[in-house]
Length: 303
Ligand code: GLU
Ligand code: ZN
Image (cartoon, rainbow, N blue to C red):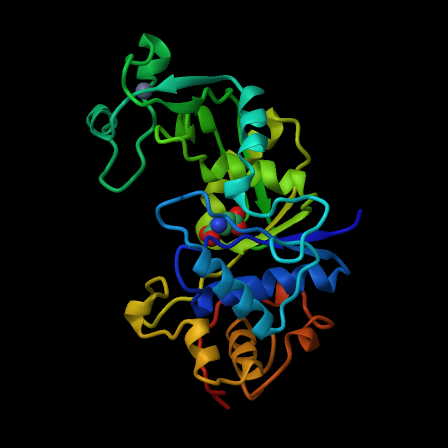
């Protein structure tokens, strides 16, 4: 079957080098298999997402030598390619699932759960048992069926989860009407014919939920490859606070994109530490997921 890969950025800010590395790896993975590549803009959150960031992402990716066959700027047969324009697809999927309205407040959910701070508590089933409270904005939750969801990934191994008891009935649409990432990503990957999902390791723990939704919606399963997040010195997630330049700043500052690609490729173990500059397209022939390592980033060659 023909391979279709994708990169699915959320345009909520400027892309840092970690985002660019994930995009590069996703693109290489598709192109190395002779596959097509889709750019999908995940702008579900109307408060955080901005059109200006979408334009910047597109310019950044093109500057790095990453191209796509379908996307918001080039069109394609599976559009629209912005999640903010795909509500009807999510509504159609939602209608096929066993769902219920939930009017629990954040505070009620926190108080009901004995979960440690910072961990999303398992939904206690309040509105499923007693019904939603009239007059309050209602989220829509999925009454997840029992059974074990199994996620597989060549780098991460296997993650099995009983979604109904370990996660609980999770939100598919928020009380303010915003669609949940978990539903949108599953619906869109299927609608766009995506076969290979390459994305950051931070999303690995979401994968069983997505597998479970795919199954309930009778959508084809996809292959997953979760790639290491680029970490700052000290092991935190990379962010501007660490002084890591964003891609747009490098681009606007006149940096050589082939040097940036070389830095990303060195950090992922795809080229030797002495390589100064390389075009993204020159990495396709030798790419294999098994070569990816979780290395630190340095903009200058180290050897
Ligand atoms: N939009 C998500 C993000 O930017 C990526 C979702 C995915 O690749 O599944 O983190
Ligand atoms: Zn509730």
